[in-house]
Image (cartoon, rainbow over all chains, first blue to last red):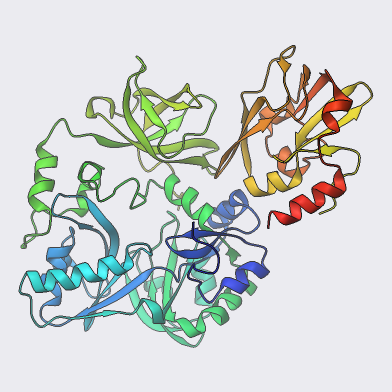
Length: 370
Length: 130
């Protein structure tokens, strides 16, 4: 078990503790799971504005004539479709179609920018490097800027008003899933109108030496410190997958079978890693599917709990599950045989050896009103 | 923290106090704090059920975790806190008062409580949890 001394820490570790955060290990990092409480923080993001320490995530710069071919091969979405400043959600799939990581890929004027998750960060970078060699892609410069990049997520209906206080860049002109570069609180920043909460908001990337100062400014201006606990409830309500659980390196948990096929572009003008395997999953009527569900009975469905049919036979497994504060019900995601994946299907989850009724519902489970 | 002195505590962070001939039991503040926002209390024993010390006597679910409540002492269940079914958050807000979980007619109160921690011992135990 990783103890506090061997976990990595972001520059905000002391700030989190000073705010009374409960700290946990996450992907090799010591991170805050909550401050005032998961439900309160979740509501702050849905109703006002919350701020997340996401310094543990990874950022790569990819440059050169070989950047586009490399990214086209190593990710599932169509990188060539990106307009300048645009971002796309994508999957780094392996040869069998499983997900090594999910990511955002950006096109900036003179480089591409890739944002990845903390736990697979080093493996993702090695993989890109290896694929460039294996595919004979020359003229590509790969830089891992994770250690020098600080990242804060500012999310919620009041996020734009809050961030605007600290920048001259006109945020009203910045569309969702676009990014720009400009000073925020006096530091050079990539301002990305993206996030993992289902609300309007920003992911801010800037020199890590400035993280504590910028965090303090935003908190003082009214951003509610938010931890990993509400990060999970927010994204799950919004039907966003957790890479490593809802989709994973296991090819059975591939993005096409999970219902994220719009991010897997079979029609792009490049082969990509896992394409043939993913096409086979697309064509396979018997491949298990990812469902979103609400719990009808009394109980919380959690990761690894079995999903059973009306006969009590195990037909799948929960891969995400929790109480959803904005829906005031327990919800989850899980994998089931395709005959049971239709919206409205009644199933059950085994909780403490008892079947608790669940029902398949459509996604997103929560949709913001504006 | 200074846990109330009028009751005894278990290693699993349950408490029990005598209210006349009735034993009231619940979850200690440390445990509710560790679990976080409570969203569901279930699997509570029926009135009349006979509990032995250490028996599972409830399922406590928070947003992030599930935990079991174990009977601190033996006895017959007299009452279950109905408030917990509608408002599980009362366990977080008032674990020593309105958030009580069960009331029982104890089988052997004095002998069984002798093995439990008093407030001072439990304060130290709680502190040692880190």
